[in-house]
Length: 111
Image (tube, rainbow, N blue to C red; front, side, top):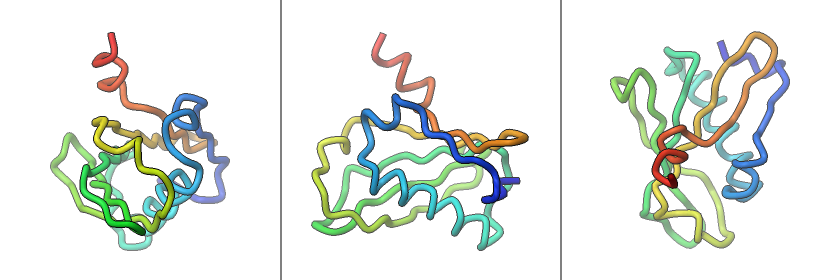
């Protein structure tokens, strides 16, 4: 599960909302979760915290409807207007790829 030799796909929707250094930070966070043996599901959701410092943002990695959750920090010094929007990024492990998308909950909220 979540083998980093697989192709990584990031949807255009994620690229439009989330800055590239943060996307890279999410991949690194997922890799850290796997190294720490915290990955228990083929779907991991990352929820962004509204709190941040000048050089760090925070995400909560959620699995199994929140039964497994842990906060992580991502080094980031860029603009932070994407925070405070309730954005949830979902990473799904598929047979040949790992795909990063925006949560269906975010899409429903915009309707």
